[in-house]
Amino acid sequence: MDHILTEIKNKKFLLVGLGGVIFLFLAYFSFFQPTKEQDDLLLTSSSNQVVEQTEVLTSDRSLSSESEQDVLVVDVKGAVKKEGVYQLPAGSRVNDAIKAAGGLTELADKKSVNLAQKLTDASVIYVASQGENISVITPQTKTDEESQLASSKVNINQASLSDLQTISGIGAKRAQDIIDYRESNGSFQTVDDLKKVSGIGEKTFEKLRELISVD
Image (cartoon, rainbow, N blue to C red; front, side, top):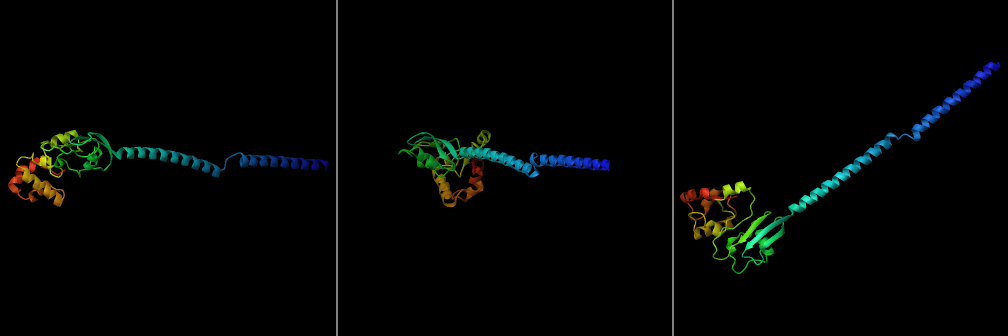
């Protein structure tokens, strides 16, 4: 009988000890091991920090790029009160550049420039004096190679009175007719539209076709 009681006591101690080990094991994983929710929270927090840092860098680069694009640098020369290099907002016109240079002098030939023309970065604006026969240097948007190929052609949408007279067969009156048509009807859409100008027929146009452009 004593032997049986001893075995029962031993089994009780064994069960108690085993229960204690299991309790400690569960307690360890409960308090010292991160839960899945904690892991997800840490991963989400790290991801958010990376995204925020990326957005800040992208924003800084965008602001820098936009800042460069928002400013035009132009060189104003000729019959203006203050020749020099000026910074102007993007979208500015030749008229804005001339105002920045103090305006035209009394000797300036107003017909030598297109005041409504849009400026491009690194462009040169030259205002001729009265009686001066010189082509206006206008903003360039083409490559050097393209500009050389098109240098012999006159843009009838941008050309001044003096520019138009450099075209073979176009005198002062016909040049003025072209400008009057342009001011009344807007830009020429194609070179063929030049035939709509009074006094320019088919034969005259054929002589001018290779000497003019509209862009």
